[in-house]
Image (cartoon, rainbow, N blue to C red; front, side):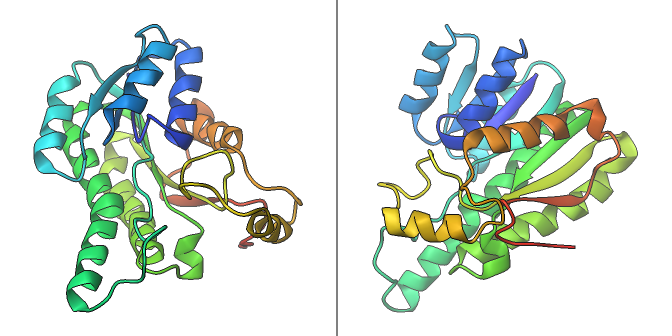
Length: 238
């Protein structure tokens, strides 16, 4: 089976639906029950769901209890930047609260999800964590939190590699058609992000789906401990 966190919306939803189209058994998680239930209805109940915050140990334990067969693929899409749409924090207490919330939603949720499902991972499983171009560009607390996720993936790959389990981090740039920015970006801001790419277009969920499906497949059996940048050339590497 496959577990997709953050599976009710955005990239997680797109990945879960693609797995369902490929006749795989899928369980999705997320903090809001309504979007998860909508995905379940859309697939006539084939996709199961568990609502809750994976950054909380009790919820992580519920997830482990809900998994009754080997996990072939774990795709951790849960996360986000809680600073979006908010005023800048005022004072140390607000700074500390925003920092804790950002790290919890991104790094802690990844660590608790992987840890709770460790014993359920199949011998040749693939774990895909999601980073962000923000890790390279330094975006508030969100960038450092996503940089930590990418670093965590490297160490995790070393720990799980002896069992044949691969761990990689997908690091997207701007992906349109998601709820990441809440009400969306202005046309001017989206045009700026488009112009930053080498391909002259912004990303869409299908781009992430294609890369994740590759990482889950036998074709990627020798790909592990990598951060794969998905940004149309907005952040070049060598």
